[in-house]
Length: 370
Image: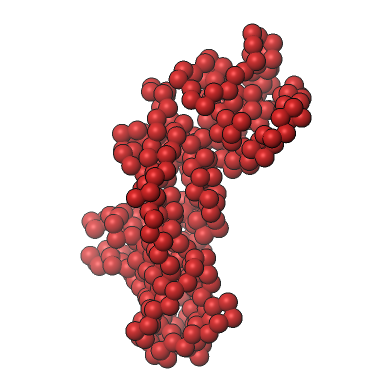
């Protein structure tokens, strides 16, 4: 059995939801008779736990009802097939409970599975640092540190920077991530498809950087040297705080999410707003909309996973497309009105992530190269 076979198996789902003694006995016996499936079984356990984040639990009556359906009323053993054309009453019952448990909400008017083609780019661009008319190439997930004396440190190696306030450019392509520690000690987590412009040292009166894309930044406090994060459409003014800025050029909706401290945001259209912790400010060309949020849903990417709360699946796919440099083809009609709540751990293996997403969305994904 494959990982997907286990995750679509009614008895496996029942086992994961209830830890029913009969289900435990069944799977213990199964693994003894099929030791070759143990690795995929353990992967399925991990995948299920990844998306099982809703704390709602089944009642004793619901457990008993499912137990009877599976172990008493069944006329024959459950047969696992790779492609399911019709959904049994039991499967539908279990599926509803799974949706409740992992928090995936979707309309079931069209229950048939469908396939989404995932176009994977063959282009593998490195992270690039451009300074003094020179370009340095790095792999992703590197931590670059700017020393006060104008030297950039990377894994013990040192790069001499132009010892002025002239901007240095760090380009992180789609499919890559990076971290940057500035000369004042402020730390940036830089998401895929982002560019950061920064000086090798700040002047005495202010600290300014420019970003395109998405960063999380923890700003070193210095009330005498205010810090400004600028984008093409707005500026964020701070003294010392932690917040997330999302300002991709291909997105009309841009956002600031404040974790701690206080900031003010001024758009280039003369709109302005002040923010307190646990607030999100969505910025469009015509307005600013502020609301109270849980910041972890907007900052989890820097910790290696994406966390969603009734997020449109189209938005989930957009996040994954940037993170893995892939394109999900022709999904607009298939995912209308469908949302997702849960976690997707950002494995280095795209296939593992698509396996989890397949469980969340009842969709199969086919990868092809561009």
